[in-house]
Length: 176
Image 1 (cartoon, rainbow, N blue to C red):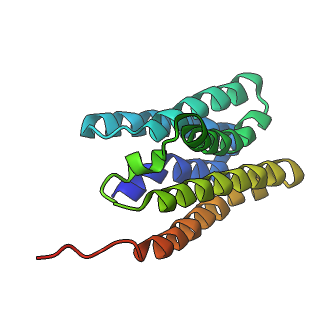
Image 2: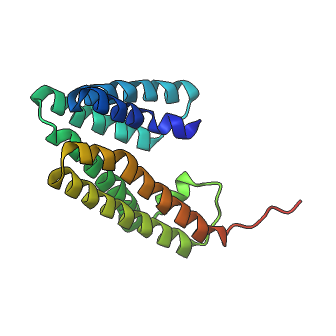
């Protein structure tokens, strides 16, 4: 259920784009993001990532609709990935904290593993930001939407699964 709620605006964006084009899809994504925030707020589970994503879709989506220029919505994922990676890097460099440890507080890992995990996510977000920028501005809008929905989601899933495999050796079974 969480996965559906997390990707609700993205799926509606995709359907609306295929049905009516980029501007209707952008409006639908903004409306779905409002509904998503309300849903998470009602459930008491609005994360910082949800707020950041919401702010970026409202700003970049709003500019897209206001100026009738799809360039802004195409920048949205690049900005989001860059911001998420920057926050993780700043947490490590400026505050000597692995912010992922706060998000995954039920997971106990050695400090060196948290550091590797943090830097691997920083690198992943940097690569995703570059990939989105490249596809957005070197391919058609249709190709970009397909990449944004299926490519980036697939890459995120593969990367998270790979991280899970690496982390599995550090997780111990609770003793009965």
